[in-house]
Amino acid sequence: MSASAAPPPIERSLAIAQARRELIESDGPRPRAAARVDAGITRSWQRCLEAGRRPQQRVSFEPVSRTASRDVTECNRALVTAARPVIERLSRAIADTRYFAILTDARGIVVDVGTLPDGTDPAARYARDIGRIGVDLSEGAIGTSAIGTALAEQESVWLHRGEHFFDATSVYSCAGAPIWGPDGQCVGMLDLTGVNVVEQPALKHLVTQSARSIENALALARPHRLLLSLNWPGQSLGGDSDGLVCVDADGHITGLNRPAADMLGIAPLGRAGHCTDVFAVPVESLFDAARAQRSATEVPLWSGLRIHLHAQLNAGGERAPLHGSGAAVPLKDVETALIRKAVAEARGNVMEAARALGISRATVYRKLMRRKSGD
Image (tube, rainbow, N blue to C red; front, side, top):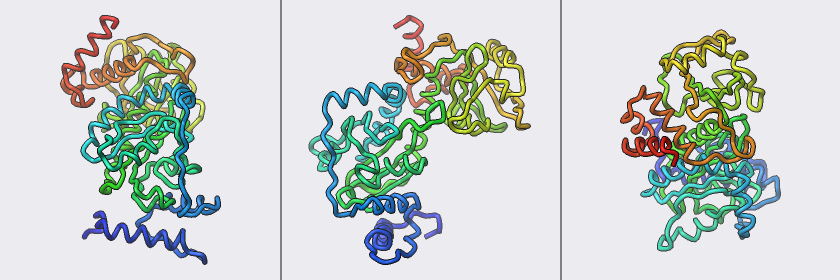
């Protein structure tokens, strides 16, 4: 077996069991944990131990009232709206794996759920325990899980069975990724969970990409007159790795996704400022390029670097969310913005745009025509 190959299931289970003995069950000084358990997981175990918890303790998934469920949905409507199309695609992609999707807010409270196993599946009861809007799945409530660890470590994680702290949650396997809002703040996380399932480490990559799609939808929902798509020279535009920068009519940056913040050197929660603070060109030239529908070009940054940039006007005008920046925008507007962006980046090639979005060409035409007719 090569050094990069995944260990066999039995070997992996033994490595997890060894790490638990060394880090959780040992009463004396704890030696170094097994190398195949992620350091973020062992840090979560340590936090649970320091809180006075023990693996044998009962885990309680508290009931959630209808009022509490409604309130948490309302408070996170923008996140749910942006994530719903992604969760629907995910549910189709993982339908044959017996995994399901969970969306939480930044505290680890469930705000949306994908398709759960039906009642004939032995996993249904365990899925219902955690697949309820309003239930608390934070590290403080249920110990080590992909949800709590992703939020604490602020990076994507994969956990399998015994890597959960409590014995009662060792039936679950899960992948989780944090979701970053247009202002650089963590607004929630996306989780893929299975019950008594085969280990699927590849889900860490899938959940990370899906979280990026949600972040892009959140950025596009910000009020803007101009949308700038960015990538480094030599990289093609049109994927989830693009930086997205939303700009108002005066050139002020109203929101951006995490790749854009990284490319432009804008610190998380930092003030994005005006376009001319980062791009070493007049803001009017960016609007002119969008009006002329010019193809992507290289633009200098004040840092001395150059960026590959495509400018596109917001066809719907500079629309603001109904109740401030944290409120919802209609799902159909988010869908239309994503479709128009894909068509523009495909240079009008609808088939290519449909392929990139994972939908049919007929669906692209139907949704664009529906918006033109005002439906």
